[in-house]
Amino acid sequence: MNLAAERDRIRKLLQRGEVAMLVTFDGGKAHSGRPMLPLWLRKDPHIYFLTHRDSRKVAQIGVRPQVALTVVSGGCYLVVLGLAYASRDPALIRRLWHPTYRAWFPEGRDDREATVIRVAVERIDYWEPPSSQVARLVQAVKAVLTRRAVETPMKTLDGFADAARSSKDSSAATREADR
Image 1: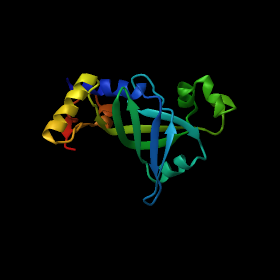
Image 2 (image 1 turned 60 degrees about the vertical axis):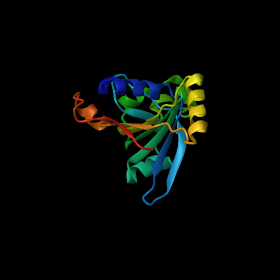
Image 3 (image 1 turned 90 degrees about the vertical axis):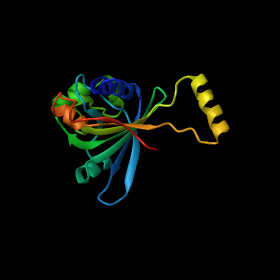
Image 4 (image 1 turned 135 degrees about the vertical axis):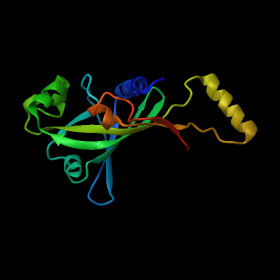
């Protein structure tokens, strides 16, 4: 599978995940995680979240923009690493808005508290265990017979920031990592 097709496949997996755990860091070594609703724009490589302007996550991103997201989707486990930026752009808020968000922003899409977090994806690590019960059973039997634990290799997609700037796939690579 070529790199562009693999990126599309992984993006679709991410989009099917209903919740992402957004992990931010403060100026020190402390981190905070919280469940967030990921939002998507067509043909846009970024992941978006709506939040409140005065939230701790916005303050943390202002100090240290590196973030991590975890998503479980379709039996696949994904960790997204990237840089986050807060925006109060009303046009962007309107593009991402859905009427159900009034539960968090009572004044609607023009709520003064509404802020967008945009995550520029740099890397995605993911694990895909076999989806077939038969394949999992074969793995388990093999592990028992060989006395070696079943391992699901981690795969990595790099270069999302480059892909956002350029449609060339030559600067990014898919690789298997040991784990």
